[in-house]
Length: 80
Image (cartoon, one colour):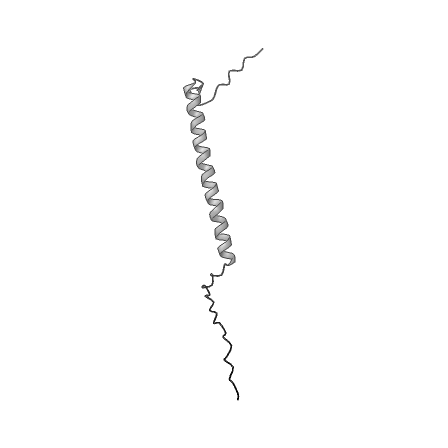
């Protein structure tokens, strides 16, 4: 008497493959670099202007604003 053995159970494995990312070209890298430099430059420029404004305001409030009629700054250096 021949007894048929059952087929072995093989699990089915499905892999979900995500869509591929788009390629990055040299142009993308260069544009990104210029964008980062532009943002850093803009922030530095804005901080420089605000610091200059604060320093000029402090100088004016302390009474050290000694600009002459011709637009020259007096240094008040005494000779001798």
